[in-house]
Image 1 (cartoon, rainbow, N blue to C red):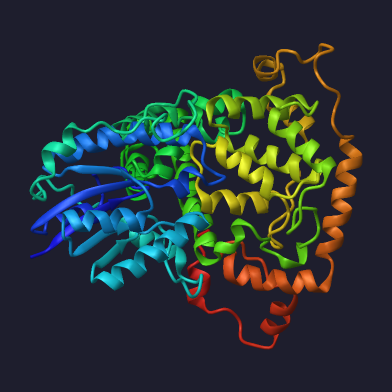
Image 2: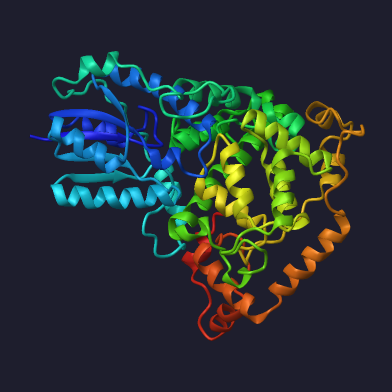
Length: 512
């Protein structure tokens, strides 16, 4: 007799959910979500994350109940919760999705795997993104992503056989509150749950996507012009495959997208622009998994430089931040650097939990180059603020925007230029920094040109060393995009010249 527990983590949905569908084949099943102290106590967790999670759990519980499956929500260490549940319900199988998360979740999964082996529980995990576990070589990764995302979505089961004795008590028990969890009150969060995710997706594909590429850079237009689906991906209320297939279907439906529709509507520039915008969005879905793969392949990038030749470049590599760095960090976190575009972006982020990508990159660039802060401490603060915190993307981007990957172009954003480009009338700054232009607003914390000159001298000087160039070749081989077409550098270049040219299969697999 097969008895299973479906362990929900960052996959809070019933659609396209392989573990749930497989549970329908079992003789008895329960669904479980564990609110873990390790998460609540982690430096990335913020009350807004917990509040949004709780808002996701109630509709998930309702959807599962409609299919006959109770959702248990328990608080505690994962192994201890599973052990206690097994005393109540002698389950033989544990089903879940794979997770590419921060270090605490990685250690948790290893502990759960040991417990399952010890107690004879068969734990099966399914991938839910394009991330490939135990990947040996990046070649062919893009084709595997396309194969996964193009496969049919997993059908939602209509009926499951619940474990006896759980249904009534589970459906009537209230979810824990923030206060009961020991979590501080949270700022307002947007609509949450699977239905809210589908509604947001429909509004984007149905019209908001028009002008997406143009609107995503400015904080004035991005709030409505971006998809606003990132938190739904981060918590799994929508699957990556659902987004990909819905986007591709919308591209095919768009007049002028290259299909066979001969109607005059194909000539309408707005229709052509919609197809163009959606293709841009579709590409970003691929990049989402590309960056997550980096953390899957090398978990240490959460706290250690990609390029070890960058160790010691800034204070913070294994040492405490210096006092002057701490003062700069606080000013940056509080939005009082004296650079109005920086301060406006930080204040919006703190108030809403969201900021468009270009402005996020500018915040990190300013911390890394103008303030010369190590990426780890600013990264932890931003992880708390981002409702859509996705560890693989976050830490890869923190390092890329800080110049410590060893392979990416150094992107140094001028807050003055960004303000001129994206807030020329000062509307955004006035909204979030009302004291700008008054004696209450602080003077700039650094002299922009001098700070940038010093940063460039250090970084470009480092990249010219033979050690850095040799290491860059190794990093590119393990983590780099295969579309870039960049020749191997340093040691890899010397090795490549002594061997045959890249194969045709490798060249054809370069999607990114």
